[in-house]
Amino acid sequence: MPAKKKNQVTASPERRRELLGTAAGVFAAQGYNATTVRKIADAAGMLAGSLYYHFDSKESMLDEILSTFLDELWEGYDAVLAAGLGPRETIEALVTESFREIDRHRDAVAIYQKESRHLSTQPRFHYLADSQQKFEKAWLGTLERGVEARVFRADLDIRLTYRFVRDTVWVAASWYRPGGLHSPEEIARQYLSMVLDGIALRT
Image (cartoon, rainbow, N blue to C red; front, side):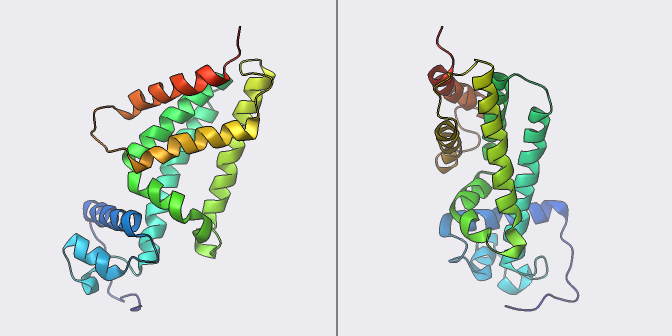
């Protein structure tokens, strides 16, 4: 792996986003280990050596892709969790925010799903494990509040429900295409109508 260039240039924000978007697409399609800097450069229409003027390694590209996605995800999630909503409204808002993030960062979501377990064992990517723990706490806590408030069924298996909702939502990154027939908000509404009818208290 070439050493970081002493005269490494700083790309414009637009160019940097473009290169990271290209890299994310390659990582998502081919996997992190199978992706080389040359493959990313080829996809970007540039020489591999030229890419090193913008990023010092493929690891730094992946780090920026994942950290940007998670920073935006938690900005939205934290706002929802701080809003003082009821349990059902919180679930609705979290699901909607999740689909918005899939719309913005579909490739990053796919990478996260495929690679996070392995990457989180590396010091540079330890924040992935921290984020997963925080994510689980937010969802489980909201579901527990719903059961306690009798908004959700008393016999609900909280952890199983969490896994079902989590996987049902995030697997959408495998088929969702930005600019498609349905907006992220519309897809979220459809998902919520199916999920909440199954967990709402029967009266």
